[in-house]
Image (cartoon, helix red, strand yellow):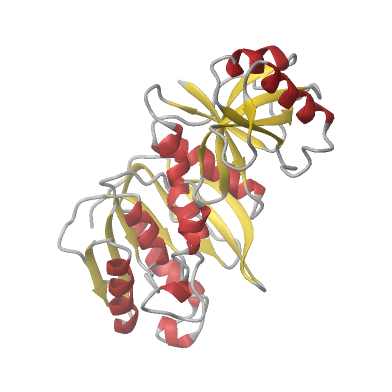
Length: 340
């Protein structure tokens, strides 16, 4: 296993940290065992040997970059050896990238690299180094090995899609939910409350096989348009009541992702939102395989979808200005039926 440090972004520290660990687990790694020496602002994960950090960065939404630890103090000798091969580099302070001109440690590191034959280039460097404080207060030197493409998620926001609604889960949060479910290529993923399809879109972009239900035909048609726009294919989308709808394939699901309706009568057929979720969610959770996950974005505390499910995570986060929702993750802890 190799250690990778993820610099998470500012949307939600708890959710971003959980996303980084779950995404690493989806790649065969996860949370490093044993005692760790945390570095401020970073989440440490493990990846299997042979898995590139670029794969991890390509999955993440609530992060900025992936780094590897290069040296503890003294840092200058390591930088001098790196510079001996030539090339250019930038050295910055993690969390304060524009403070290099006033940060003595950053200035010293840059001088060490330049003195050994390297060239400092802050605009287009061949290598990017970052300083961050370790648990003892002394600096650590890390090298950026992959950057998260944050513009890609922005390009999938609702105003850019052919089918639009005033409120939809932002793609970064939808991708975080798919990562929390540990979606892998080929996984069967179901959403019993499809809506505009934001969750299925992100699961599909991670290679999942998609299944979904919504009682509103316009939502299903619109979701299909948005998925096609993003180059994603759905195996089966059904119009109807998710409490009775069926798919052609009876095989178990690997994950359930859903953002249930929040109680408007038009979106629940007149049934209360809590009653709809209580009726529908256990039915589909029962069909998720042992070891699979259910991720529910709820307007408040929610009960596990059944006795076989243990809660892994509960994090409140603002999703739309005044709207706060809880990201709740459940994992199947016991073997039960996964067929109807």
